[in-house]
Amino acid sequence: MKQSSNDNQRKKGDNFISTELPMGFSNALLKNAAAMSYFNTLDEGQKSNIINQTHQISSKSQMQQFVDSLQPSL
Image (cartoon, rainbow, N blue to C red; front, side, top):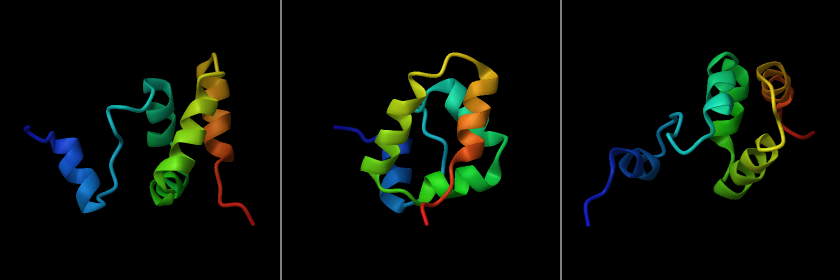
């Protein structure tokens, strides 16, 4: 079975915007480097939890506010 380039990147641990992310979420991440860096440090379960939260968001501005609020828990 052939591996995709995304699988290869995931195995290498490279930071990237996956094609599996909702488009609105990935677009908002691209506008906030700190949020993108934080998201890339999360494990798969944490990422999945955040992605699931994005399914409740219905506008670009709400999505950007959500992404802008991403930060490490203290």
